[in-house]
Structures are given as structure tokens and as C-alpha cells.
Image (cartoon, rainbow, N blue to C red; front, side):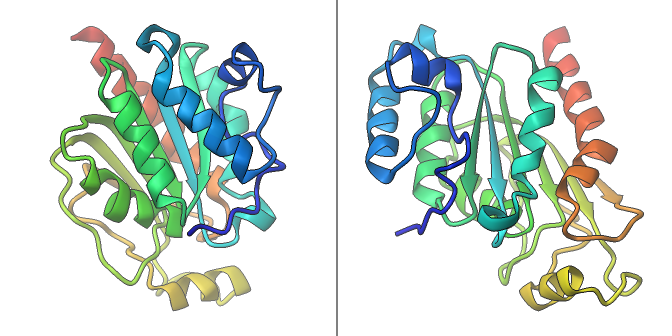
Length: 222
């Protein structure tokens, strides 16, 4: 069972929470269960397009991937429902992806560090019938390596080459966790020039924003 430390943050779309009389955010596992049950029962037309950000091992404390959420409304637009989950909330992430993936919606997934490998190893492969428009992995770390994901239209992998990176505390933690670095299964690989594993928002701003914008434009032209 996941140990969730980030209920103080906005984990679910405020639009849905307020329309269902739940305030601006969930503050406990009980409230979270209530929200997810309501999501399952909600009419399909209440749900927008879908974006999930998944944080790494220490994200509950430092909010490195969580910081990306501040950039997403302007990038994606008002018709996206934006969620945040931690790296070990696998069951909840699958539940969200299956709920939105059963609808004709755009689906965008973003993960950092262990959260990136959780998305690519544990979440997407378990939802084989769901077509994901864009997967962005920001310096994924994990004992198990990447898989081919045929249900993902476009996959961007941003990584740090650790033979060139500084021996900082954050980079050394990533080294211990076994970084994936170049992922041949991805559509696009990009090196993050500052070579800092902890800078999830910097990686996203450097490469993720433009990548997602292009993927959504491609989808819109079809």
C-alpha cells in the first residue's frame, strides 16, 4: 500500500472537486477514495482530456515533479484535467488512466526519476487497450529497464549521461537507483545539458513543453 505524503498538495482537478462539493483539494486517504469513487460514477461528459504527473522517490518532500503542474494549465488549456501522484501510487495511476482511456480523450503522462519508470514499467503496460498520446520520462531511474510501449504514440525521454555528470548528492542518489539514460524504445531522446537529476522542471521546460505542444498539434490535425 502506498505511503502518501502529499495530501497537502493539489493532486486532483479543482474543477471536479468543487463541482462535486469536495472543496479545493483532498486531505486524506478517505477523501481520496471518495473522489476516485465519484470519478468512476461521473457522467463521461464531465471529464476532460487527461494529464498525469508522477513524482519520484523524494517528491513528496521536495516537490520537484510537482512543480511542473504550475506550467501545465497554460500549456494544455482549460479542457485538460491535471492530476499528480507519487511513484508508488501504481494502482491509483492505473485507475485514472483506465477511466480516461476508455473515453475519446487526449492522454498525456509525465514522470520524473522513479515516477518516470513507474509510468513506463507499471502503469502504461497494465493498460494495454489505452492509447497514450504523449509520454514524457524525465531522467527515469529503476532497477528494471524500459519496455517497448506500442500503445504510446510519442515518447520523449530526457536524461543525464552519468559518465559526465557531477558527483552531487542528487546525482549520486540517481546513480544508486540505476538510471536508464538513453532509451532506445523512446521516440526521442534528449540530453539535459545542466546534468542535474533533481531539476525536473528544468528538464520539462527545456524539452517537454515543446514536445507535448507538437504532439497535441499532430493529434488536432488528424
